[in-house]
Amino acid sequence: MNGETLHSIGDLARRTGLTVKAIRFYADTGIVPPTDRTPAGYRRYGPDAVARIELVRTLRELGINLATIRKVMDRDVSLTDVAATHAEALDVQIRVLRRRRAVLSAAARRGSTPEEMELMHQLARLSEAERRSLVDDFLDAVFTDLRDDPAFAAVTRSLTPELPDDPEPEQIEAWAELAELSQDDDFRCMLHEVARNLATDRAPDDAMGLPRLLAESVRAQVTPALEAGVQPDSAEAEPIVSGLVFHYARVLGLPTAPPAPDLRRRLASRLERMNDPRRDRYLSLLAVVNGWPAPESMEPVLTWSAAALRSRVPQR
Image 1 (cartoon, rainbow, N blue to C red):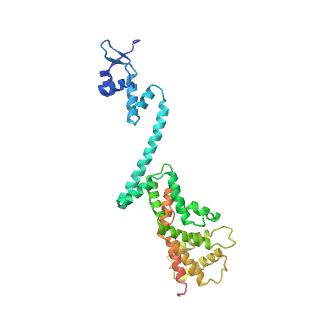
Image 2: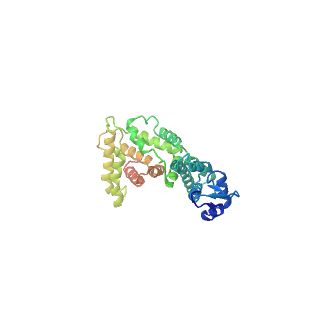
Image 3: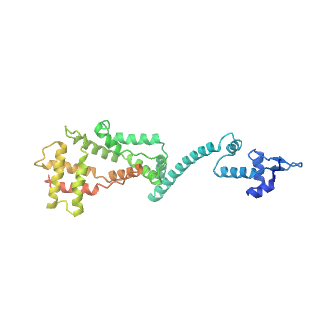
């Protein structure tokens, strides 16, 4: 054979660490065929046999089947194409495994029942189209008769979860909990009422469409009071309450003075309805799913504001 050194099957086994049986199997399937045979019929392998066997072992460890490996060896398909195809398949498997791990981790932390764990598992397995359908159903319930209003487009987007194609485990866990929460009928009704209140509170000439600055104004005016330890029913709180009512009157397009008790009562009711822990939880989960910064809870601000307003409303 042109002076090439040929290896016996035993020599090849010692060099590669495989068994004689395994090498014979690869030879019989045509993956690593012998280069020649002795007069007595014993197989002999050329210098490239060791490299071929090492490649076969690597591909097998990566989960590639023998039929595909033979095509690679016969150059019917390129190694590059095979590697790319299997890399994509592994990506899918990794995503599935990460989803499973997230479900199991969440179930362990929450002490979930078998029924709750099954629900989380089903939610985590939803396709992108199925997730979109679930989210659309939730938003349709929240913004019934309002979703087509251009003024609510930004609000709708701000409540829409977008799970990435390759999410982190915490995003998968957050999505499962958020999806469960979105199916809570009472939670849907609460958000729908808040949305309806926003629509009702729009001034006839409100060019902005929604009084979106209301919550921002409340936070901006009340946060310093909270940090300073001002009590809601104290005299120090009076200017803050007046500022809140003044802003709300402008939102409604009403005279800003004098503030009527009914206006304070109405604003307190609006803020109390917004002050639902499930709303804060939804927004926190939404931030995790979408990769947004964690939102600051409005609960302390809303609680203080409602208490300050109520303390200045005559009892009926």
